Each structure stands twice: as C-alpha cells, then as structure tokens.
Length: 377
Image (tube, rainbow, N blue to C red; front, side, top):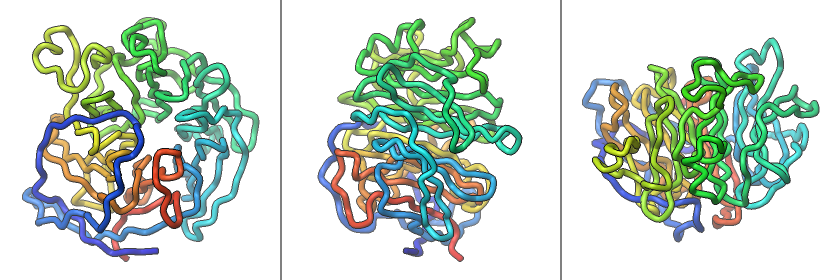
C-alpha cells in the first residue's frame, strides 16, 4: 500500500517533557497526524514523500539491517527467527532460528552486518539466553558463535541494539535488567553502552582500561545513531518521569539511577551528563533511532528519528551542528500504533517497524508491519 504525503521541515516546537519505560500502551489515537510543513528556513529542498507498506503480517520484528544486494534481514523477538525480506515483493523467508529465550522484552533483538560483510559474510545478533544477554556472530544459516557474553538479562530492560560505528567498532546497548544500581557499577555490563572489536576483544582506546564499558548510568538503551560528524546519540527509556536522548561521550556517566532525565546544574556538578531532550511518558518510550545523512529526503538530512512505543509516533528531532536540539515534531502520530525501530536505508529512505503484537499493543489489521518513508515516484 502506498500513500503520498508531503513532509517537510515544520516550525518545530522545542519541549522538555517526561517519559517512561516500555509500559502498557496508552489508548490508541486515530487519524492521520503527519505534520504539514512550511518551507524550511535554511533553504533545504523539499521532496514529496510516499509512505509505503513494505511487509505486513509480521510477528514483533525487532532488529533490522540491509544486505549489499538490497534485501533486508530482520529478527522476530519472540519466535527467535531470522528472516530475509525482498523489498520488491514484500515476501519474507525464514532463514534460521536463533538460540534465544523469548521472555518479556528479551529474545532475538538487534542485528548488525559486519563492516567487511562482503569479505567475511558475518552477521551479528544480540540475543537473550537462559543465562544472559549476549552478542553472537555467524554466517547466515550457520551456528552462532559467542562474541560478548555475560550481559545481565531479565524479562525487562534488556537493551538490545547493536551497531558498528564509523570507527569500525561494535557498540552494544544494554539495560539495567531490573537492577538500577548496576548502571553505576563499572564492573557490570548492565545499564551501559559497550564498545568492542568485531571479535569481542576490548579496544585499547576504550575509556576504562581492559573494559568494554564505553558509557554508563543508563536505564535501558534501545537506539544508537551517528551523525555526519561521527557523534553518537542514544535513545533511553526512563522510569516514571523522563525518557531521553543522550549525546554520548566516551567514559560519560548519564546519571541513572541517581538522576532521571535532566538533573540540571545539580547533576552536572556531580559529574553526570544531562540529556539533550526529554519526553513525557505518554509521548515516547523511545526505541530504535536513526539519522539520515545522505540521500533521498533532503529536508530530513541530519535529523534524528526516534521510534516511540507507548507514544505511538515517530519523533523527528532537528539537530544543530553542535549536537544540541534545534526543534522536534511528531510524525505518524496515531497511524501505526507502537513503533519499535527506525533505520536509514541504503537508498536514503527511512524504514520503521511496528510492535503492536508484543503483548503491550493493540494489533491492527496487517500487524506487524515494515513501512518505508521515501521520495515519491
């Protein structure tokens, strides 16, 4: 199904709100709420954007990545299946079942393609087992081998996003696994963003010697994205007050559980880093994140997109060149239900996935879906 919509760079409203964890969804809203935009003040071109359903009838898609030939791979969180999707036909083929324990928020989670995939053929996945959360790697269809193990697991706050950064290192987002104090424990892998070599070893330039910990003080990170200056941003579930986007610094401490959201000068005086933006609980529960750097949607280039579960929308955050927030607006509000992931596609479009069959949503006809937002025609 294709629907044509004009999405531009609206006069964005800055707002500081509070946000929550991945709690049961708020009552669904109705109607088409995509913002009708004015011409951007910075002179960037606009293109008309089509909203296209790439695939439907899926079961809680979580991780998503693209193969060099244009096909996509995605995980189903609860079943543990890895599937290959042909974007042209919308047909999915199950490739294998990963060795997961699908319980609550755990299961088959993030996916990342090796930076040298055309040479080594390796795919990386973040999975939940009976003992831990772990990162494994494998050639498609082959038995996975452990890369990073011992990440605490629970039925909630399992993190799960993985991505290779511009430096070729593997970044791993973890949750506190229900133990808030673990986020401040430098000896625990919970409540952290981890950074390792592709083989799982610790890079020599990590901020903590002989440790994969890259940043700490996180509650539950499910989104990682880099801008054109190689700056890392992460989306994070809060508890009862504030959901966040953080601009990540090597060795930085982001305050959880001592501070939730923006702690202002008090937090900074204690050595914690405040988020660059926060949301109301009903507005967010932020999961996947993406920044469009090249290509197909000029009025969105450089913007950060954050999928919102409880908020049932896609947040577009306009980033200034210094990494601060210049404005933000909700897209797709009330149209798709819970949105789990946002990913920049190789053709410059933006893909989003729904998560209405995850036990906290209200499934709609065709759920779950993968949607493409890209230039018309």
